[in-house]
Image 1 (cartoon, rainbow, N blue to C red):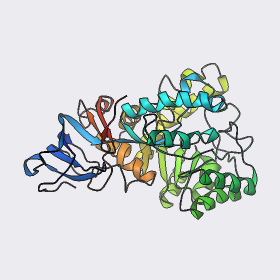
Image 2 (cartoon, helix red, strand yellow):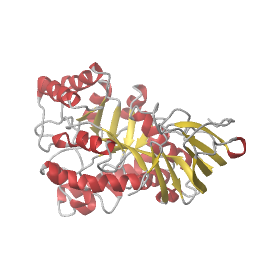
Image 3 (cartoon, helix red, strand yellow):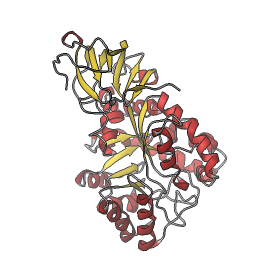
Image 4 (cartoon, one colour):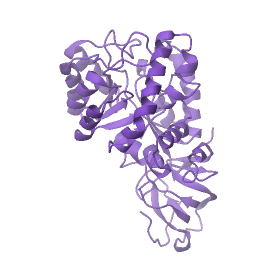
Length: 399
């Protein structure tokens, strides 16, 4: 919340033309945000009541729309859907994947994403990338890592790793957490980008899904489920999964089940609708393209109602690097107000990913993750593409 401030000894003062703090409060013009030496927000307030230390560094965004850094709630670091054969990309040697991921993550960061939840990589690559970003070897968003996806031998999402039966799932999840995972991702249904899977049948039994959720909860973490609808989605929600990824074919009954269980829906539109997504990468695969067309028609018809239902939702690019603005634009196309689309891209993503105490809004005590735009996304959501300034942990980011 905005508050009146007195003089502080600080390192950085950000002068904002318009400040949208992500809390749900109305935007404020001519505001100031003060960042301490540790990269946390010390205070936020009207410029005419803030007296900054004369030693402070001034960042002049007085002609910009300033808002929290974007939270991409579902992506993969090493995949480029437009190249096709996404699982084949994840079977490649780790060095080849890491080189591709380095370019992807830089693109994400400079498009305004300061936090990204990575939803499965082989080789524990996401943890290595997280460490490289933290020590400054490469640039990218703050990463929340899943490690290897938990999928069946014949399931969607299988690249190199698979886990069948309760005991194998427990071992796989425990190994992921031993390597430093922040959450577990289980593939509960088939997917659009694999020819041999269906979007609603369950890839796992109730007991197998329960094992993954239990192991996450045992160490104070949570489980997310790739699920488009049907039995797989229902079992995942009933067994305590916290977030449902995609949900393209979610029915009214399944939606109500999610609401009743307080499960989040993480929407991923660009991989399905953007011309450089699955359409470009797998255009020569008739079985995949048939599922793309079915999913598109269903999402177009149903998601305006889904997003009005009261289910909590966030957005993620699903490897469509740099396209969080497209995700927000699609929300608006489906009837979501621009303000609520911005909240889904910031506070909502942080809450779904359980990092709202650290980021997602511009409030005292939180990380100084913010972006400046050369336009007003509340007037035209397309302005979210016009990112001219990125700060993460109080440090301006340069590509």
